[in-house]
Image (cartoon, rainbow, N blue to C red; front, side, top):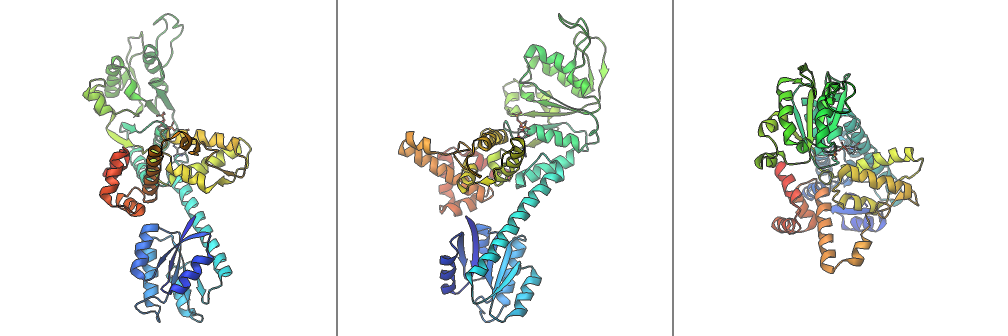
Length: 452
Ligand SMILES: Nc1ncnc2c1ncn2[C@@H]1O[C@H](COP(=O)(O)OP(=O)(O)OP(=O)(O)O)[C@@H](O)[C@H]1O
């Protein structure tokens, strides 16, 4: 349900609005300071503001000051000012200051409803437009406009023109390859090849020849000289995906290539110069691997000249919805379906789900939902995110744990990763929130805050 902030000191009008606008979640404020508190707390897209606020309700000064502060805190907020019956001057002044629209008392609910619907619609369009622009600002494949993803995109813009070896860290399915391609696309090497190799998916004995190539006769079956991925990427960019899975035996050869930019094919004696920009990616903790000597320290420092952490989907707030909508459009075209959107429950379920498989998991769930959906809107059931099944088989303790975990994650998302706001939203103190985070092992929430 959409939140509407009503700034109004007349309790009678507050009540009237409460009963006559059942489609919105109404939150109230009666003066400038409580209005700003509510604004920070709920971040409403639309606000109605009575210009005659205390301490000077007969005058519009306080209301206009409140309007300016709202817009400086939340410039995209749609503020509908409400004035006395003949107060055109102040209404126009408010619009000049940035109010979205004005409305003169007495209140006619039908008219107000039309204004509100248009304001929410415009706000939604602006948000979607912003998301598209954000995606287009770097690479059309990186969808999302959360702070975390915008920071990562800015880093991509800075490192793309350089030759620095970048290490992309992130859980499986977070988009490491998408980011690697974005770096390549924004680099001077854009018109040369982008070659990716997944070190985890190729058997150890084949990985060397896949990477470095081989000479004819190097081993049984080597009927002709074959270029490896490194040579194929000459002039362009090579992504070494899952570098943490590269066998120790190959790491020394890789280090030499990275330091000297020369390779020798398997079975060859000739040194071949290559001009390749290298990007590495892994979901593993390479520093820990170095500590237990399963990854060479010198190679670690070589590949991590700069490190870019791609946040997991659960830490990307409303990006979940933005990405889901973009994927829905894509799958509608692919499967010639006409699903229009998501039910409220489906949106809640998506915001609450921890997405261990990240965007790949979201893609899979959406693909089957688009195929399975019986109605115009995708439901939580279509996404396989309904918890009915769990309730049937769970103990009460488990259900409570599940509900508390979901509520914490949801509030955390709504609070954009701010733990103070999260505890406010949940109506608990910050120490209680910390205790629950520890109890349910939601450590990513605390780690994320530490990074902010
Ligand atoms: N921001 C994004 N918006 C939309 N789709 C995305 C985004 N990031 C990634 N994807 C899609 O999610 C899927 C997984 O992305 P990708 O393969 O880059 O992840 P990864 O981190 O490299 O995963 P793995 O470690 O398992 O190889 C891909 O299909 C990709 O197109």
